[in-house]
Image 1 (tube, rainbow, N blue to C red):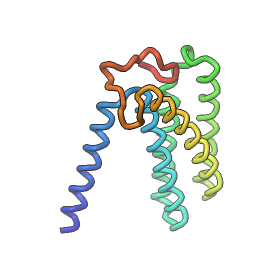
Image 2: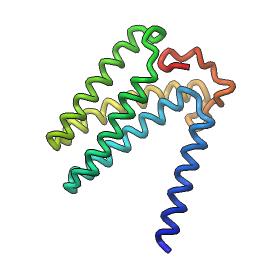
Image 3: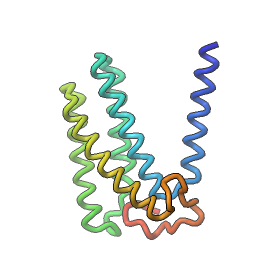
Image 4: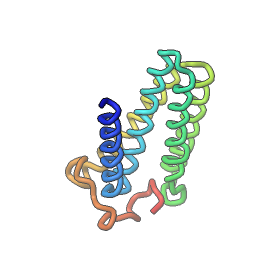
Length: 154
């Protein structure tokens, strides 16, 4: 019976995420990427503490993918100017720190990246809340001013 409940909960979580993504503004999607990276690194720390090397590596890899492919990949360096250039450097730095954290089982490097991600996420949450009034009232993609964001590619 537990397997049935677990499967139902996983399906619900997946559908909830998919629904959130479908109705999210580009800015809200960036916040969701930060959430995913933070969650993956939080798991990696717990897995590191438990000595689960394989799971730790998988979680760090997921966070790296979000930072490098998701967040860095969403940057429009021409439109974003100096801010985008600084974010490129910061994301590359985070990637380097995570590779070292994985290789050396170093939670302090994960903590460093977590602090950076949380700060950046907070800034994006402020932006989203100013645009929508609240963080949960994301602008639907059809009405979002996609060209107004210098961070992401439309």
